Length: 107
Image (cartoon, rainbow, N blue to C red; front, side, top):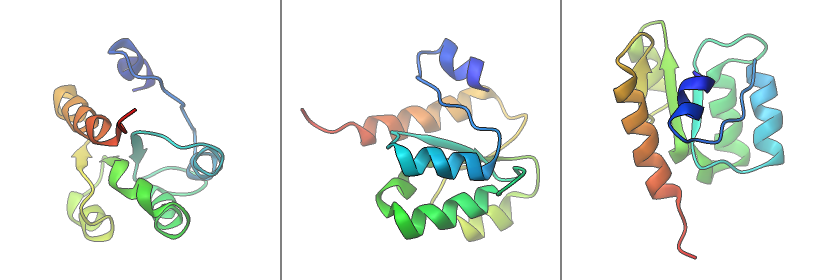
């Protein structure tokens, strides 16, 4: 995933776990956050709840991917795009591009 996103021009900060993602989010702000719902050492849900509590303005920048059922993710991460793994990458790239455009602040 990191290579795909890098290849199309996005700067990528990969994290191997939910807790590593929280550490990155605590240290910096990101235009778009792509999270796997089922991560080790802290899930996508854990990261979502942390953002709601500590960085609520960044919640609208989230995109979730999951290999599981979509409805439970959508029920917990209300309003966030949820994309099934194995989906055409264009669906993911379109969601990311849309969020990136809205995250850009006027100079």
